[in-house]
Length: 454
Ligand code: FAD
Image 1 (cartoon, rainbow, N blue to C red):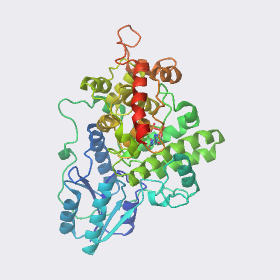
Image 2 (cartoon, rainbow, N blue to C red):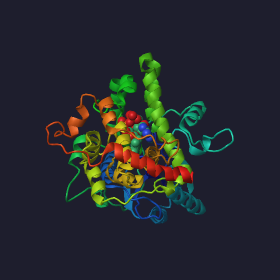
Image 3 (cartoon, helix red, strand yellow):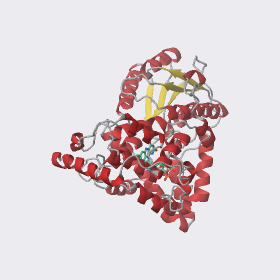
Image 4 (spheres, rainbow, N blue to C red):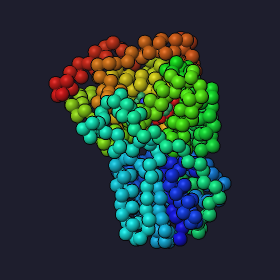
């Protein structure tokens, strides 16, 4: 009887605890991916994410093939698909790596219970976070709501385990019917908007490791200085790798900590970088505590914020990078073309949407969800709420980024803006669609309502 490994947000062969345990049983292994947009509460993927998933699944299938296993692909509600596969295969065991969204946890709990009832060993593993959410607690046993003490508690918890090697020479389980990755229809057809994504990315575990090596060798030592400068390739660009689990955070952690231990010059940068992984942990732990993170304000007094009704063309101008504010337009066009945006610029465009255009943060979150290749159910709403002011450890609402000051400070020579908005200094560039000073004042006046509710 085979062992089944159910892949989800962990599209990798190395450092995959569920696959590792299955390999150690010595049983034939069936690797399974279920494309599930149908189970209640599961958030359907956006367009850019679907593109990434297509290519990452294709790479995973090849990676599994290299170690003797085969990826079975199915589509439908996960519980029903698994029940059908179990009836077909009568496996001895079912293994997976944990997810932290509410709907996903509910599905996993139900699957575990019904597998065990059927006499099948069902086990889940921690693989995609460095620290399990329920293990990091304040002195009084509650979850943290502020980052600095949260990260201090993480750093004094047992250190993240060393990554596991990829299993060698698996025995493929019996062949079962499945779909091909193409059958999942994840790619855009007409119009094909994915040209920029193809130019920018090579999804898959092998390319992910190449990116990690390149970052550690070439950019880590300067990360602390360069990370805020969008015109310089100073960050790791590992966010889609972590989102899809092509890399585990443990692999990234140990690669960076190893460089730090070998080279004193990298120490400060390494600490800053590891704390960025800490923000990823904090966002996921926050999602674990606030399952409705993408729709409900963490600070509920923000529910009374009087978002004005604006003409849809205003949101559209922001989405298309046609606001007349150069740093905002550059960011939005980078996003559309490449499926990512520099972190500094993400903060600026989010502040501009919520605090100058006075558009509800959820509209921005949805657009990012659809267009980011790293669109993440924790990091995305967490950061939107952080910028909007309603989130965990959030910037106060009255701190409004001035996109012009941000540009002169972080893109002083205009390298970044010119790359994405070539018409910027040709005289052909429009005036801003809002007055920055006036709109800021209107936002602060609206914010008084929140203060009164708080
Ligand atoms: P690096 O600077 O190299 O950082 C390394 C890793 O740390 C990242 O890959 C990421 O996994 C993590 N990280 C860094 N900053 C943050 C942060 N603020 N919050 C959580 N994790 C962080 N990140 C996503 O992965 N998915 C999203 O959907 C997403 N949406 C965002 C929306 C807004 C409005 C903002 C302001 C930020 C968002 N971020 C999101 C966080 C951050 O912008 C990206 O993780 C980062 O730009 C990715 O580039 P990098 O891998 O080169 O980052």
